[in-house]
Length: 203
Length: 149
Image 1 (tube, each protein chain N blue to C red):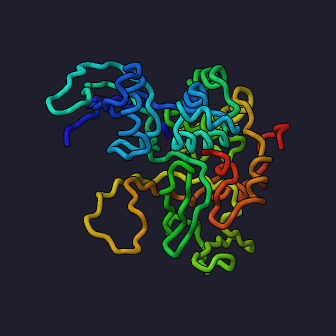
Image 2 (image 1 turned 180 degrees about the vertical axis):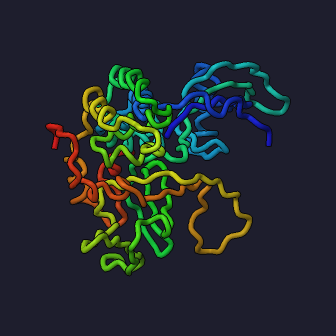
Image 3 (image 1 turned 120 degrees about the vertical axis):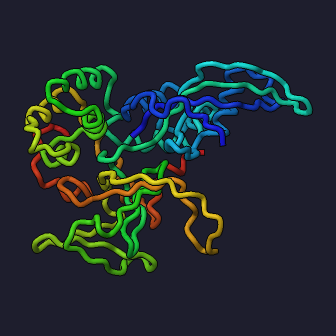
C-alpha cells in the first residue's frame, strides 16, 4: 500500500522560520508543500527523511532562504492486485464508494459487484441506493453496517484537473482507485466469517 | 513543470513499517494527540487511525522480518508477501484473493497459513469495531475522530 519515493525540490523557508534549526524549518516547508497532496506517484502521506540540503541563498527581493533539498516521502500507492480492507462510505446507482479514512476515493463500479445483484433505494437514507447480493436463497446487503469491506485493486487513475465543472459536481478527486469485490474472500468481511478459519483462540 | 522525482519507488513499506514510523514520531491512540500534533499532522493521524485497526497494530519488527524470511520457501512474489503481512489472512478464503493464479503455481496454501498462524500476531480485537457500530452516525464518521484536534 505504501512505498518510499525519493524527490528533489527547491524549498523556500520563510523568514519567520529562520530561527528554527535548519532541518526542522525545511521539514515544515516540505510538509506544507507535499503532505496530503497527490503527485504523479500517489498520495504523499508523510515526510520520511531528508537526505541532503544545499544552498541557502537569499534571492534578491525575497526575505526567504531557498534550498535545494533531496528527501524521501512515504507515498500511498496501492499496486494492482493488492487486497485492501476499507469501510463503506456511500453507494449510488453506479456502484459503491469505500473509504480508508485518509483516502476516500475508492470506487467499486456496478460490474465489479458480485452477480446476481440488485440495486434498490435505501430505506434508511433517502438519497442513497443500496446494493444487495443474491446468493442462492440468501440476500446480502451492502451498507454501512458492514464493518470492513475487502476489495482488490483493479486500477489507479489520476484524472486531469477539470477546467470547467457543474455547480453541484462532486469535489474533484485527483487520484481514484477502482476496486473489485467480485471474488472469494472479497466484499464485506462478515460474508466470509462462516468459513472456518484455522482455530485461533481470539474471538 | 519540472520533474522533481528522483526515484518513484525507493522501496515498498509494509503497513507495520508506516505505523512504526508514525509511532516513533509520537502518534498515540488517546487524547495526548494535542501535544503530539507538533510532530504528527492531522492527515498523518488519519493514516495512523486506519492502520491501528489492521493487523499492523499488533505486529512487531521481529515477527515481520522472520515471516518474510521464511516465506522465501513458498515461491511467492514480493508483493504477495507484503499483502499477506498487511492482511494476516487466517483462512483459505482470505488468502486466495491475494495470490495470483494459485492453482497454476502449486502454492502450498496450508503451509503459508500455518506460517502466518505461527509467526504473525493475531489481529486486533473487534471490540472497538462493535463500539463504533453502535455509535455510528449516518455519514459513517468514527467516534474517535471527535477527540482529535
